[in-house]
Amino acid sequence: MLNYNSVIKNEINQESVSVKEISPVMKINLRGKKREFLTNIGKNLNMILPTEANTSTTSDKLTAIWLSPDEWMIVSNELVNKDTNKYELYKMLFNSVSKTNLGAVIDVTDQLVQLEIKGENIYEIFSAGCPFNFNEFKRKKGSTTQTVLNHIDVIIHLKEEKVVNLFVRRSFAEHLYSWIDDTASRL
Image (cartoon, rainbow, N blue to C red; front, top):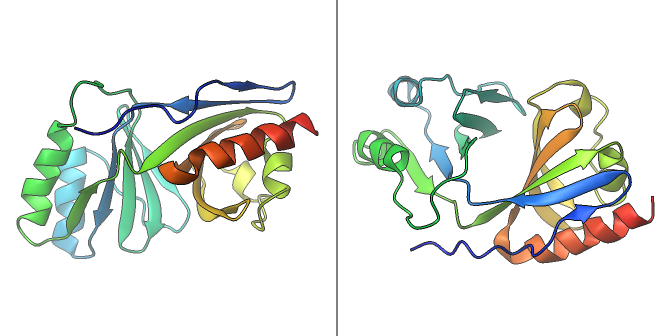
């Protein structure tokens, strides 16, 4: 059984930004490069994986985030049942991709914490601890990047104009959350 204990105990509600953990949300890592892999995933997910660097595609229930030319993270747009770690989508993808040697399907639900950051000063907070230039990023809905924030590896996804999803490894989530709170209080 996966550990759904929330790392983040409260929400940040500063004047210019709010941050909360979105949990539990299914997250699946996909790896593969064969044409059959892409076709299989497209049929199973009913969506096309993004092939352009630092982009994402979204359907009603799922978001596919480009991580590298042969790697994607699939994130559920809906909360999942806390009482189980069995996902029909994962089982279906594992059987049709991993077991047929088309690629790899890995459940990373418990590995990554998803934070939703909303507000006017998101990029001011990011610029205080991140070397990435967000000028182009913030203009295109669905943009993604893998970078470091306060020396911690993160995946950032622009969900809407002033809403960002940030994925961080569980072991660093509380530290990063405290840093974001402290940085937001100084703006």
